[in-house]
Every structure is written in structure tokens, then in C-alpha cells.
Length: 298
Image 1: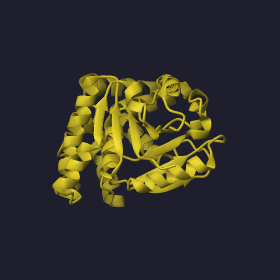
Image 2: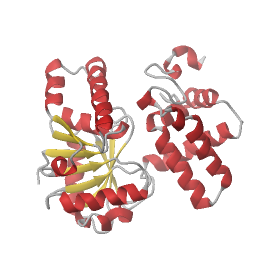
Image 3: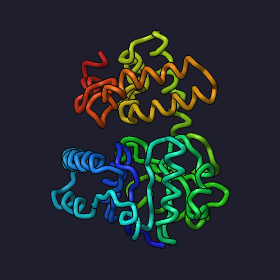
Image 4: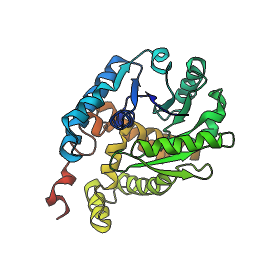
């Protein structure tokens, strides 16, 4: 099977990046979200990405023009997926939303369509029964930002077809990712199995008043040579995702202290529209966050 037409379900920070990268690499891409406002934000992301690619990726004006010509946007789910060879889903990390999304997709998508989830917290086996095509369902997980942390983690479940798994591995390579095949289901894949404990430790240090978020970031960046500290990473991931992950952890452990952290994220960031890079402010202000200033590490 040759993949030509790709639909992105969810036009948030990562969904918009996946759409841009996929279109830039020559695929026809339809971006779907439930509201025109979300699509407007995605288009604005894409304009920003085009400038970034010109400045940092040596993209030509012709390449940028061709990328835009391969991008379409719609709030009509049926139209969005009618010709899709592959769907990449990046809806919020809430089980009920993902379940309902796959139930809708299963009723509308062509038999040929491969479903992939970009979920950071859920295993494919948790959602497979709602797709009505478990053999054509698996995870293709991207890091943020897609074109810098250019890995594609591919994780199936017991019913995923080996042939489909290989097709998605090859697709990840074709869109400029380095494929990382995951041999069995693992919550967090490889990347988040390493990253989440770091962010959890940073969040604990911050909320327990041990150190300021800037000093936590400085410590990590100076000691490891990393481009971002944990709170810079959180701004990239987005406050909604952080809130959902912390809340889920708190509910699972029945830990009021952890749940109170989630509420602080909601009150101090989400309710004030400080969602991170996507809204221009999280822990830092964008597009020129303080941690990119050479003086930050002195």
C-alpha cells in the first residue's frame, strides 16, 4: 500500500506540526478540527512554520509554496477522511474524547484507511476495539518540535498487522522522521519513559518550593548541554496536556497533593490562556523565551 493522502485529526500544537512536516515532504494533507477558530490557529502556525523553514531549514520559496498547495483545512469530518490512506490523531489526552473520535472515524473512513494515534499517555490496546479495524490501528508518536526531535515512535498492539506496522515505519521515514519501532506496548514509549520522570521531578521541585522554575531549567541545561530545561519543554508540550497528565496521575494514586498541582496549573495558566508556546506565554514568553538568551545560563 502506498500512502499519498493523510488526514490530521486535531489541529493543536503537535497536530499542526505533523501536518506541516507531512505536507512539506510531499503528501496531500487535510487538517481537521471541530471549530473554525482551531483551524485559524493552525493556519497561523503554518505561516510561522514557513518562515522558520526558510530561516533554519534553507527551504526555498518554491518548496514553501508547494507545501501550502498540499494543505487543506476543514471542520467536516466526513470530507476530511473520505480519501485518507492514513489518519494521524492528535485530539486531547482524555480517554472519552479519543474513544468518541475513533467511533466516529470507524463509521466514516474507507476500509483502506490506517488509523494512527499520537497519544502520549494511552496504549493502542485501550482504543483498538473502538476503531472497528484493530489490525490497521497503531500508535505513531511524535516529539515536540517535530522537525528538531525528529523521531517517530511506532507501537502496535497484539492485533496490529505486521504489514501495517511496516507501512507506518516506512511512512515515518518518508516524512523525515527516524523510525523507532517499539517491540511491545509500553506506556510512554521510549521518549516519554525517559522524559516524564524528568518533568515530574521538575514539577515537584517547583510546586514544593525547592527551587524557582528558571533555576531548575538552568541546572538541567548547564549540566547536560540541553537546548531546553523541563519548564521550556512543558511550554512546548502545552499546559492542557500537562494538566491532564497530572490530574490522571493524581486520580490514579488518589493523591490530593498531586491533584492540587493540577488545579494550580489550571488556575494560574490555563484559565489565563497561558498555554505555552501555542498562545505566546506559559512559564516563559514567546517567540523569544528567556532561556534562549545566552545570558540566561550565566
